[in-house]
Length: 157
Image 1: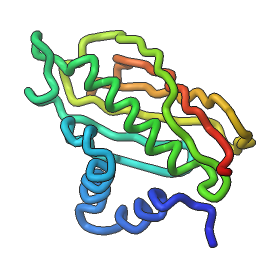
Image 2: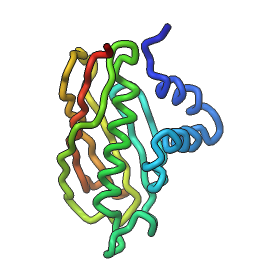
Image 3: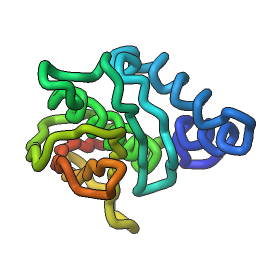
Image 4: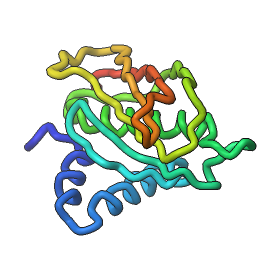
């Protein structure tokens, strides 16, 4: 039996289908419904990497017509969580978000793309705080937001 996560296996099946990224994104939001409010679209997923986009539309706006700070946080957490789930050895370890430090660098007035990446290979230990850096870019490829999301990794009992 493979040590790949069910999420990564599902991604690998869906990505080659017509509308596969859209279907996979919907499935992620079905599993974690809160993320559905921003209608994220997962662009790419592999061990150590996830990228996703949120469209610039009124439902994610703040009072000044730009993408709300918390929508940016939600997108960062989605990317980090999906990436970690696809990366942590499913047979031996589990994870949960523990904290997040963010920096808002500019107003987000376009669609926004998030990228969560960690260096691999990684030695997985018990009771580890894994810091996952996430960067958000506007459509002009300007860095508009950064987050360091702490994922608490533990061995399964």
